[in-house]
Length: 351
Image (cartoon, rainbow, N blue to C red):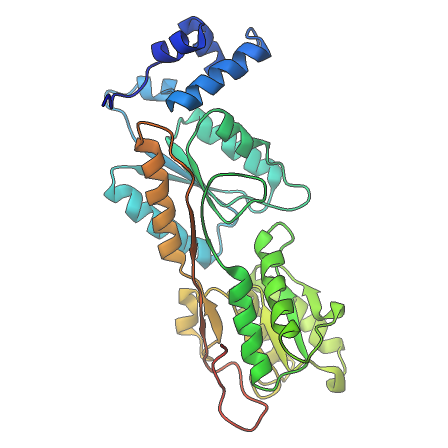
């Protein structure tokens, strides 16, 4: 079996064009007709051909590199992803380039362009996803046969994926509260650009649908994803709500929101969990240093990053096209001191 990598000459021969035409397609020259462009791109995908860029030609030895595109730089959840991805990439001879969009779709588009200009071998992508998200850079990666792996599902995009069952994760957290007698539960939601918000809310609704309780529409409080978001919204909400209408528990989009909320509740003179039970999401390392041990959903962050890089390198180094793979990891509810039972017994672990 021939295991050599295809060349630009192979693409030109199969597409029935010159090497110059293939080069023009690779470099997005306007001199090529759309029909010819699509034919050449189709042959590139069929042969699993990937061009080497100008940056590589200037180096005496080819530098193998992977791009990692994330949404937030100051979230410890993503710090853990970077650490694990860099470790795996380095172990397999690749340099990791990291960029964050901070939830800005235009910044994300520029990052895709920059990664392409740097001629990275492939990308691990955790993109912005909301009603205004521009997915054209993702589809351009597919057109140009650039290997990429998603950290989080994007509907309509067929690609290798590493994710966690966010619906089940939040269902279990909500069920833990319901099983312990909490009826008035609210959700401090995350940023609209995250598909995880939609998935986690679905988990909350599923837990309520499995009980005799109703989760009202007003129980979702738009918040964000950062410490200051949880603090600010926590102060606003709990300073205005009457004691009789106060929720018994708050599910938070992530641990940062939960930590911000803990401070707000303390400043308002409300005890956790005596007055309000609080549940986070992610189990970031920072929780080990809090005075109050936070109940949270542990995400397999490092495992996800490691598997994503392994999947990507598998596609990069394949001699022929590789079918996309989907890996869905499992979360774990970690019950600590920020939740209590209202049934007069010990806190029980959600099922």
